[in-house]
Length: 95
Image (tube, rainbow, N blue to C red):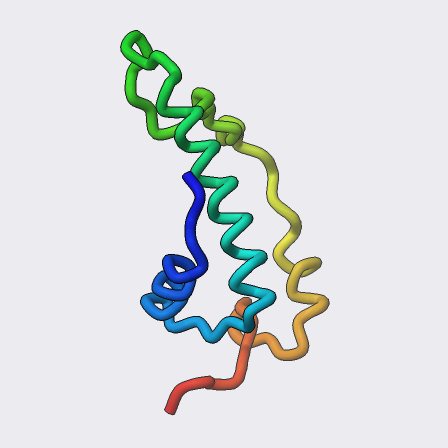
């Protein structure tokens, strides 16, 4: 399907795009090519293809939680700029 320059200008007006004459011609060719590809895709028989949200099956890539020893509390707090009652002490960010 070939678009006319007027159709491209109308689309640009609806999208609130200011286009130069060179841009109108470039977009006319590009949009026409896209529409031609959709015409080709319309001819593909998809009667036996179930609707999907993704082209491939999604798989959870998270690993199982495993209990493991944590770092020593004192070692972690050794890098804290300020520490209070065994916790990191930070400045208040909200009043």
